[in-house]
Length: 298
Image 1 (tube, helix red, strand yellow):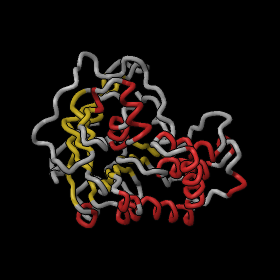
Image 2 (cartoon, one colour):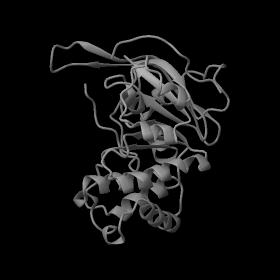
Image 3 (cartoon, rainbow, N blue to C red):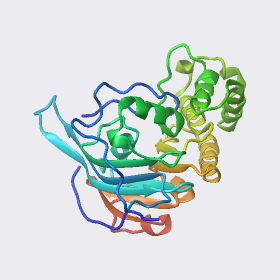
Image 4 (spheres, one colour):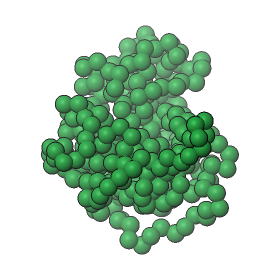
């Protein structure tokens, strides 16, 4: 499988927050790249990947300051295969979360392609798809779990996780059963299942988000600091759950800021710096290279 290679060098609107994995919500109108028609996939893409990012660029215009544009991604290339867990590393502002949000199409990219291989084997450029097709992929094949849960009002914990299962093609009955198993796995007590998620603590909300993201695991799961608010016991349980995704063939692209999680879960680490890929390789090599700009807790 082709992977990002050691590269070189540098430079980094806040936009809307990422949509949690369980809600394939609508995307703003006319959000696909203006004037860009979907292109045929390059002939040199690896045949064994779920995700292939090529030449991805993203900039933000600082409308409330002086109107200047700040570049966040500069031609990023990246591949993720089935069952592979690729962890993004680098200092704050390197472009890690921006990359995840471009792949999920919460952010619109400024150029390049985001090739996603569907369960049917078709290659789709997420960056250029119409909004409705992106929403379908979000519900069925691409999941996103962030450190924040923004539940819809008046929806119970059980309903949030069940809905994620039905969106991925499960029957209602199967989704309810799977939701109960997922909530048990992340240690959400049964007396909380019928409560509105808005009343949960930050750590409980994060665990519900994980349960929704991993029920009927998608082909591609994007994780942005998914255990940041968890105590040690619940953190260990969630990391176990994420580790088992390899058995389902789920491709994972993640951002963690702690060395233990990366070493335990990642099959490969990609280091970003100034919006570019600086290095890629096994965690044992990358995380101990003192020449790389890393920002992980040990």
